[in-house]
Amino acid sequence: MKVRIVETIDYAHRLHNYEGKCKNIHGHTATVIIDVQGNVDAETGMVIDFTILKKVVKDVLDELDHRLILARFDPIAPMPEEYVTRFTGIPTAENFSKYIRDKLMEKFNAMPGPLVVSQVQFWETPGNCAIWSIT
Image (tube, rainbow, N blue to C red; front, side, top):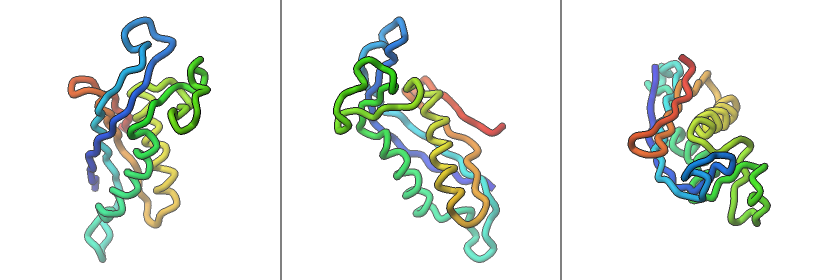
């Protein structure tokens, strides 16, 4: 069984190694759609309580929300920590979807019951999306 949660985040980033408009700092309001798969608990009738799922997702997304996100190796990345999140890879929608999946799985692995993030859709704009999926 799958359950889905939809959240939005606001962030700024740049692709310093890209030849185009995206090499400049710019912002997005991204919609993040997360599918979680697991067994339905016989006692609760749920895969996971949505209140718990929302909190776990919020904890992960708060690392990106209202932040300037730069690649660690971006020449302007050595800004004070209060202003910038230094991202391990290039801060693209593709890498954000995988990052969110990996962070959620770390949290789910510490919880009871087998939960799997089966898909993360990262809609950078209403018309552009990167999808990390197990299928």
